[in-house]
Image (cartoon, rainbow, N blue to C red; front, side, top):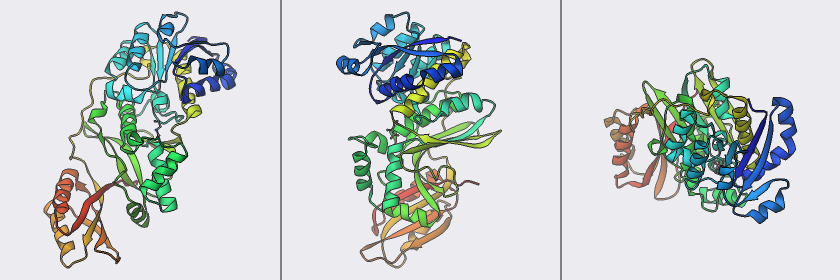
Length: 426
Ligand code: HSE
């Protein structure tokens, strides 16, 4: 155990400032609780004048190599994000034996091999609690509180932007575009929201959570990712009538020896623990062999919540000397389940002309693929096309996609059928 941790902070943005503020306010408390004195020695940011105006008693530089070459710094906090130059900074610092704490999910999920290999080899420790779920201690929960469990399923609402949009669409009965605009006005969504609304951010996070849960390498490129742009207000309302909410879920499930890892809009029954995760909040549920389901809930973004996770990693790494207490130790690559093999219940929504024989033709296609219909709903509305909602019993995904391909070609259908998997919670 180290009693003093001397940190170099790279990136003085929202989270960097949060780390500084947290330590200004709570460093004494941390020392009281753990005996560890966490200090920021140097801050690296290109905007040196701005940083100097906001901090005192800390060296400020625009050259990260000053931190690399400073032997008195034992821990690097990387908060600039993106792949390069963050990857070079992290790997060079780890090779020099400096522990690294990062919030960089993109680097770790898309190009993390070298960083994880360095952590696994014991060169230095790596903490990435802040990469997932903001202030929710989801990594440390798995690594310590739940360490005696085999994890079957990780399921999470991992993106606050999309959760805010879906919640607002329902609460105010507004379309996607209006909810997105509101999220942008309030600072919950970026000016370019693509990364969040297309599910990539949640995809990075479920890849990282899967690595910790199963101790295997998981690459983001193998995660099946679908965003929320095709979800309409109508789907949200129908889901509600049936007792479900639509959430963008990251799901990672062990099925036999294979792992199904994906991000997709999913219908959750009201009684599901994640169904009540609203607004910009995140929720993560681990389903384990010993405990059964365990759910964590909290703020998934923001300077101070994310800073809390950064500081948690710093303190834990200082407390532990054993290399197995790195943030992660990995045994080879995960065995991905081939797309299409999953079986689940589905919600289908289509717009169709209101003519005799249409339902029979749609049902016929589903029947040809051995898909059993559980319910059908059609309301009388004015207009050329009417919405039809079908739910199915458990169906094979490949058969479902093939049947939808056929249904989409019917001349009486307008647009593409919306397909949403349904999760149950017994
Ligand atoms: N943009 C993310 C979200 C937070 O909306 O949850 C950072 O991962």
